[in-house]
Amino acid sequence: MIKFGPSGNCQRFYEAGYKHTEQAAGFCRDLGLDCYEYSFGRGISMSEGKALSIGAAFKEAQVELSVHAPYFINFANPSDESAQKSFGYVLDSAKYLKLLGGERVVFHPAAQGKASREDAVALTLERLKYLRDLIYANGYENLKFCPETMGKLAQIGTVEEITEFCKIDECFCPCVDFGHVNAREQGSLKTEKDYADRLGYMIGELGYERMKNFHVHFSKIMYGGKGEIKHLTFEDGVYGPEFEPLAAALKGLKLEPYIVSESAGTQADDALYMKRVYNTL
Image 1: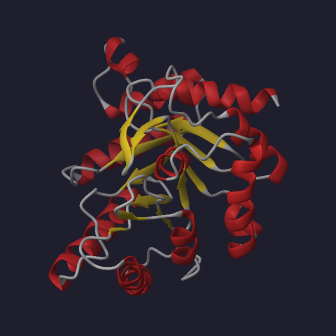
Image 2 (image 1 turned 45 degrees about the vertical axis):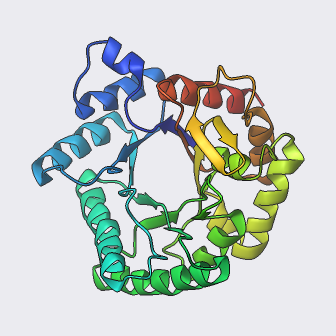
């Protein structure tokens, strides 16, 4: 079943006097939202006890949890030592995800750096094959590891690159950030066909069953010549993309993803807006 929810806590959460992530479970439930993404973007500093406490609150509220791994991950880094740290960031995120009771780890795959695009993608591919081996060796194969499409031209993560990475193994599930796609492609997502073409490509390469419940990040994003600049809210009328044509494409293709709003401060409200739009189709 399709799910909608926020990434982290919105301004309204704090304005209501809430402080703790456990309280976000009931906050999301009472709004009518279905999921929540916890970010380890700046590193993992949570205790195991805190993870269990948060997980129990979300389980009681019947709101599904996912996590975002630290932003420092770069599987195209030429340094093997740095690559080892990236493996650790993903595996540590998986460890805490299990304590939280969730199933999905989202991660940024790589940055191009000084290498050619071809070499950076090839190195990332080989490192992700080794990550697959580590995932199985650590007993995490029942989780979904979601490499994300990226918004800056210097980052590895086009729709085609993410699709290729996910061909490595079924433990990899694509995370399509449509705001990122729109930003790196300079406003390419406007119509239902624009969305359906990209999703149809991924279905053709990965199969319908792999794509049916794929992971989505959605927000409007300001962009420039080099791609993404910053996340916006749904109030923006300049940059896009708009959710309505994506909702129509998802309905038409019978896809039921896990959709996370990454709006800047209004992520719960914008997640609820997306759910209402989808349910009116």
